[in-house]
Image (cartoon, rainbow, N blue to C red):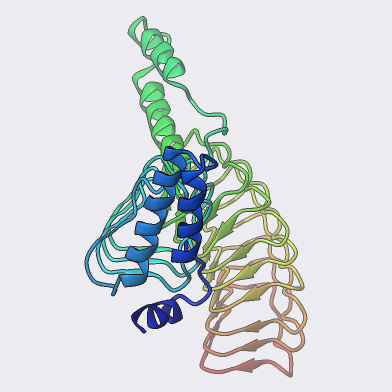
Length: 350
């Protein structure tokens, strides 16, 4: 009866059964299964029972179970989860929660981590998702240090190169969980393809950044403030939180299909002339100082404030514009009149 209840807890998970293990022992006796294979299966049986008996309190240690290929859905570990050297482990279940540290050293079959993974402590080991990305090598840095000693490379240039290498190492070691902070890396020009961030991605002041990978995914906020070298954003970009592109003066347009799950902050984007017709923003839109902005999409709806202060080239507001909070149109000398069907939930500041 005890095991029936435990199996109900993880009903979609298929561990090694007593019957399967008994059959394996018979095969071992006649030499079909080796001693090592039987020992590995016994380890799997022990780990399977540990999982089934686990009540969510304390550590759950499954390390060195090389035949363990997966964990049951709904697993929540109150303290540490040990999976060291589980070489057969191919994936972790969606929704896995670990109250302490997660040990993934030597999990060579594990190539990615679930985006909704929650770990209260540290993730130790795990997949190297971007190890093939071209970066500043140890040799490159050593060569720059030698050139610095003879005056060819300045102290400032060497310092910036060290910041670049540090940022690149943070990207390489990023395991897909939490935020990635790369602020003020002035030599960073690109990000690796396949980058998925389940927290914030902060690139404030990365003035040499030229492009964003087409398949970038950010569940939290994307901070691109002051990325003056950025010329475009990829079509279909979806940001789970806010998008902050203040002072991205090299941007001339926003991509089709852009979805922003929070605020869109683009004050001082002096190259932007219009917004995409299918733009979707969950919260306020802040366009103060977008001096080249000439128009907004017809039927544009803003769930929050719409700030158009100092948009000196804006000549009209579109039909069907709806703003749930306040509308700011101060210092807009080219804006002659407001549309008759304009809807503003709070105040108009002009």
